[in-house]
Image (tube, rainbow, N blue to C red; front, side):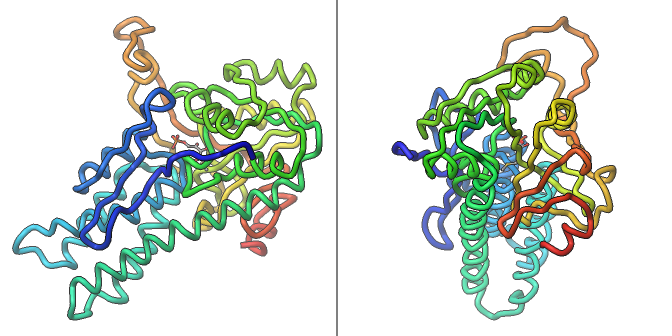
Length: 350
Ligand code: MRU
């Protein structure tokens, strides 16, 4: 791949007295700026405001965020009580991506295992190792998703993707974009169509930036153009990421994804979801139980600070939707391609 290198979305700087550094994705692609998180409120705000975003990246950030929180223990509070407070607070940052809760559950299990050790610094050191392991494992999972998914990509394919699922949304490489990067690295000639992804423009701002950095031929389109490019025969496969996948395969992803799954079905185009196993929520039988984040109406009426709708207009702004399992051709995980998508195949392959 042509000099593909983007800054890391998150990085732990230093040892247990260190801090979390985030790439501020709200400023991309114009400015590459970093945010040093010294307290838990800054971490929470960064997740809430999408300075760091994408399901796996949110999970890794939360795991490191625990360490940021534990650095500042109020006097008179026990470590156990402070851990509880930090954990509960981070859980309120965003509701849909299950990776957030998956990572916090994993950190909590580790804490419970070691909470009675006599040396507090030793506890922090073990927790930091766990957070760094989550990051390292995510990198490996993304690489593996890329390899498995690239087998589905043929030379000459036009590929439609939505939102941002690249290195910015994960520890590195990405999920759906990792498939695209890997296929390109294998020498396949591909062309990516990238939805701008209203209202926060992750496709325009982030995915097209990552694709440009990688030198992969890509065309940016408005979300409303997807049907037309499919009808024109430009798309051979759709590949997207996920924020939470229920036990039956119903998959929540950025608003607009459900529409793409319907369009792909209507045009007989395969529709794939790429996600690590940390994105599955097997406690939910189907997608009806997935909590959908509702965001500030101003993201629609005043995108990026410019008013585009009349003051007082009523707005609906769900950040995610759910594509039903029956419209998903396959789910690519770090372990295998799950197809057909159903509860039995998912259970057997995780
Ligand atoms: O609101 P965002 O930008 O966090 O939404 C991100 C997405 O919907 C991604 O497609 C999903 O998290 C998968 S990221 C590998």
